[in-house]
Length: 426
Image (cartoon, rainbow, N blue to C red):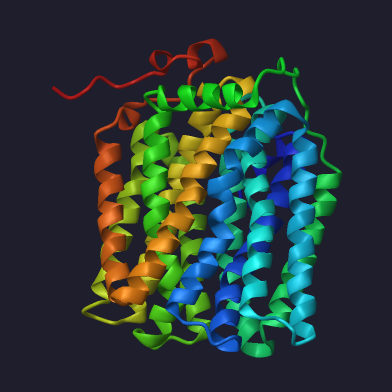
């Protein structure tokens, strides 16, 4: 249905990878709602504890992404995909069993959340690194559009489904459902063949990691992607870490309404992914990417307004904008990043972006834990707005808004100057 014409022209290996990604994202969204609700409603956790839970679920991205990216470049992407999804499936099954046995405590939930996040980190590094191995250069934008649309659908259905399931039959059912969904993704990945490419010469790991870092931070287009993603996600998870408690205590929302509000994020993503093709034909790539930071800042202003007008409608509109703008950023910048990065470096470059995107999350969640414990959730919401203002200002000053289009060949993409840029304003 959505993007069906583009999807039909994409290789079958990519299609299986994309559908497995949809299932993975659906399971993740189920857990991201069910875990804090379980902590609050079943284990008696408060705002600081739910923020610590967010730290546990995101810390592997900060600690392990870059070494894992080197593994993807050196070894088999398929092995990384299968191992990561298997780990997620096992940890979710363990939580479900402990809930059924009424033996789950907060510490165990933290440990299993951390282990499951290692699997999520592995998939987040390996899936985008696998795309250039499965599709041609001219297919990168539609391939990433399809991935983001599938992710958007999961972001719509996952939170709503999780809120409804937890309200109707408890968190156990949500974790059982997430386990089944992950198992389905694992089957699809087992049927997917990802080319390994030429094996790079074995050198010292730290030298290889340093090569990837130098390439990223020396590139005029990759560097703003990294910094903007870091600031965006720190602000986003600062908000996410306390939102359930803030929504219950300040906005008077129940599980169904919380799930619906989080689902509005996915509705925004679906709309953004749907119109991205239309936008890409009518504006240059840099302008399209700029809509992400603009949308994030507008959303932060709306959620900040709930400090004075505690309306669930403002929260819902905020989460809708959080989904709408950033999905356009993800589609445009992911395709550009894959095009300007040499294939032997794609795993490490993907890993650096994962560190910025996901590694910023425990930083934001940790900041949320401290602020919530010391000053209250209102200060968390205010700091969120500050971080989103910073990411918008940074990307406006970079070369990224001046990018016209994807480079036509790999030779053109190896240097920043090979990408078509609009002239700077006088």
